[in-house]
Length: 70
Image 1: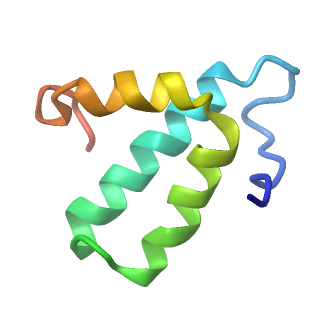
Image 2: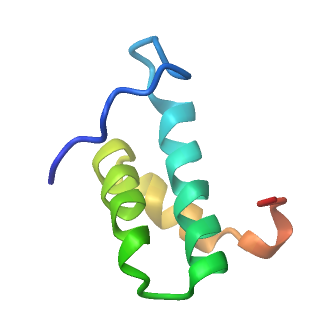
């Protein structure tokens, strides 16, 4: 897995917020462009490289419709 590029919004070593933001960006992308859109692949790669797999499992259980993505 390739690591996500540096993001000026997250300058510290704690990447929790960066992980969550990339996860939300991915879901915004698939909501806008559809499941399997190739331009969303980079966001999936980013959150998968930043987030521990346990977090991804938990985030996947959360209903994204309850989160404000816009």
